[in-house]
Structures are given as C-alpha cells and as structure tokens.
Image (tube, rainbow, N blue to C red; front, side):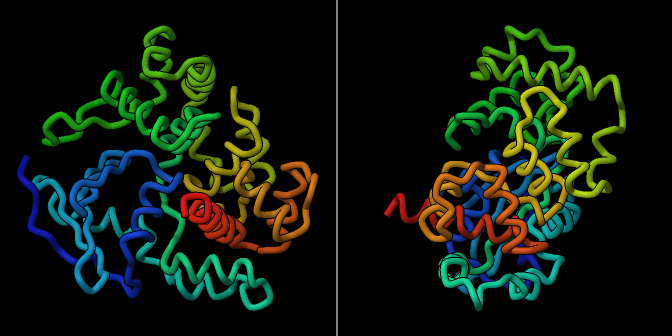
Amino acid sequence: MKWTPWRTLPSTTRFSAPVLRELLDGGQAFRWYETGGVWQGAWGTDLARLRLSAEGMLEWSGPQTAGKRTGEALRHYLALDADWDHAMDTLPWRSDPVLAAAMKQWPGLRILRQPLAETLMVFLCSSTKQIVQIKQICADLADTFGEPLTDADGHRQLPTWEAIHAADEDRLRACRLGYRARYLKGTAAILTARPGWLDTIPALPYAQAKAELMALPGVGAKIADCVLLFGAGMLEAFPVDTWILKVMAQHYRLHGWKPDHVATFGRTHFGALAGAAQQFLFSDARLRRDS
C-alpha cells in the first residue's frame, strides 16, 4: 500500500508522547498500534498513521487513494476542530486540586469522536477484559467478519451489526469473545430488526439515551456511559469502573458508594463535561498504578 507524505494536522494543541499514547491506547479506542514512534489505527472506514514532530505537533499519513480525506477525518476523530482547551478550562479544576493535578499531568488529553455502532460493539466486548485483550478481540472480529478497507493491504474494518447477526455464535466465540458472543448476537438481532434506531441515540436526552442502550443485551450502566461518551459525544456521561471507584473513594470520600451514585455525583460535581474529567482522573489513576 502506498501512503501519502507526512503532513501536519492543524491544531493549537501540542502533544507529548505519553499523552498521545494514553489518547490512542488508554481505553477509549482499541485499534491503534505503535511501532517505532508511529501509530497506525483504523476507525470506521478510515485508516491512518500518526506521529509527533519534534515540536509536539501531530503529523499524519494515509492511504494515497484517500487523499486529503484522511486528514479531515482525523481532525474530527481527534476533536482537533473544537476549542478543546477553552472547554476544559470550564471544568472545576480551580476548586478541585485532584482534578487540577490530573489535568496538569495529561495536557491535551481529550475524548475521541468514534463511530457509534463501532463503539457499542467494542465496549460490548470489553466486559472484564484488559485493554490488550479487547484489542485482540477487535482484531479477530475484523479479520474474521470485517470487510476490507479500500486499498489497505489486508487491513479490515470491524464487522457491521448485520454481519454479526448473520454470524454463527461458535465462530464469534472463537474470536475470544466467550459469553460475550451471546450479547453481540442478541444486540445484532435488535439492531438489524430496527434499522436506523441506533442513529437516533445521540439526539436523545442523556438519561433517555442511557436507558435505551441499557435495554440491549449485555449493556449495563458502565458500558452505556462509555458508548455515550466515546461514540455519541455526550460529554456529561461519567463511566464508573474500578479505577474511578477507587479515585472517588480516596479523594472525594465516597467510600462504599454504589457505582450509580458515584456516576450521579460525578455528573453533578464536574458538570456538562463530566466525561472529560473522568478521563483525566482515569488516566491519572492508571499512571500511578504503573509508576
């Protein structure tokens, strides 16, 4: 496959290598891989490479057949067309030293804008799995059921929900899904029977959108919030996992609180951009685990 020359992505934000790694490989997306400082990833029907310049600017390269479209798609995917820094300044970091420290540690970290159908699929695969395992499942699903990416030399898209619906459950289980294959099949049956329904989710009020998603097989509160945050652009969603439970207990004195109550506190305390605050806190907790 022939790649375009490297070009700079227009952005007012400069990135560090740790922030870029956390953005692409920290639990939001599961189809990026790094080799020698170059990240290659796929989302939807797009394929791209990313690297950092010496000045901390993002540089990109894409399939020659895609032309400039890859750069435009990346700007949207990475939320570089939004005034992210200004939005982050509205978070309550001035009165919250825990959030302030996390934001200082991860300058430029943001919420990716991922395809909704794809985000639902990957987070249904994520239950009780580590990031490396989720990436393996996604790779297996793409290789087994996905359509080829145009002129991409063996690279494939994640499968459509229609392809999952038509798939044999045993073949899905062979993609390291285990019991999650049943949830994918059940959700695929609903989505196939209700074409266009998933596309209505981003326009719904948050509470209604979450309730609608939680009616799908295998979608609990945490998965629904992840889908809404990373796939529907609902930045008020506040996913609660074991990392966030620990952070909120240790730093916000929410000892013994149930996940639903912690999520409500998070949305109330952090406001309309609670999901961005959650990502800073989540990444900071993982950094301290690894240090």
